[in-house]
Image (tube, rainbow, N blue to C red; front, side, top):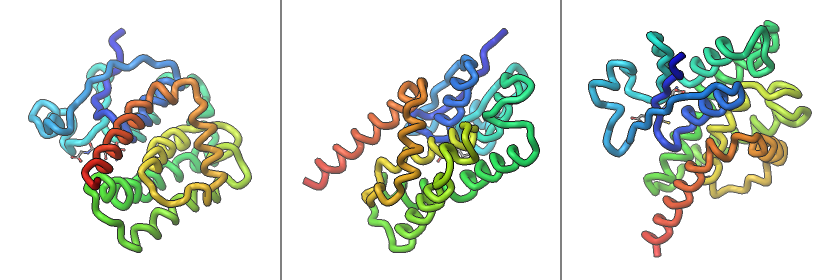
Length: 219
Ligand SMILES: N[C@@H](CCC(=O)N[C@@H](CS)C(=O)NCC(=O)O)C(=O)O
């Protein structure tokens, strides 16, 4: 049986969330790297499979699927067995996971990109409103984790995988992350997953290189 293919950019949080889900399920993926700098995602052959011109895109035989959280749900549905803690069948438990996946899509990842990542990448000072939005999303995660090990309870779900991939961008935050002790303890717990380093280390290395470059430019 042919492997599932995933088109990705190195470093992209939604792509890393999909990779971690596949690893958690033990599903091998055939990775197809696109280069952002070459605008590979705007080329006609990619636009045909993803008209939104974004990554990730998954191809499973003749089935093509975009949107990381849809892909994560699909992978658990296909490979997770009858029931799986990653995306539980219980209606209320699943609703909690969906709520957080939607929160990530609509709020958390959006703030991470627009108010934290882009100002860092483009070396533009953040506005007061941007700083407030960042503190608000980290506080939200910290509060959710006040009384549990994972975002929806005592077991890890795809909401943890999706949000932790976005959360890794805290690496470029100049504020004090120790103000969010529950979130940081959860982050550490997630970093201890056997596949976390393999999936995410390129991102850390790349960001550290960009930070070094910025420092040299300001010297
Ligand atoms: N909601 C989408 C978001 C995907 C997304 O934002 N991908 C970025 C990379 S992290 C992208 O492809 N950007 C293309 C561009 O900026 O032109 C998902 O979760 O899959």
